[in-house]
Image (tube, rainbow, N blue to C red; front, side):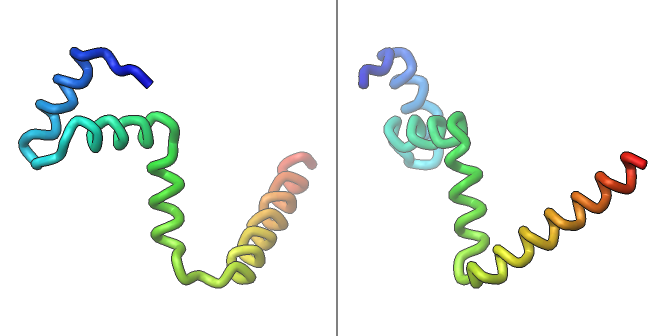
Length: 74
């Protein structure tokens, strides 16, 4: 992958105050742009949560949403 020299310089300047290099700044920017940052945050927050519990909660929410949709359609 090639990155414009001006972007590399700007990334270096952006990371300098915190001691982070251009590569770390660029990686964070790509993660944010591609939405990976959100996925990482959700995974970190839910680490150690029982998958069965997650599935049950998802099913419960789906059922509640469907009931609400049926109620509003009447």
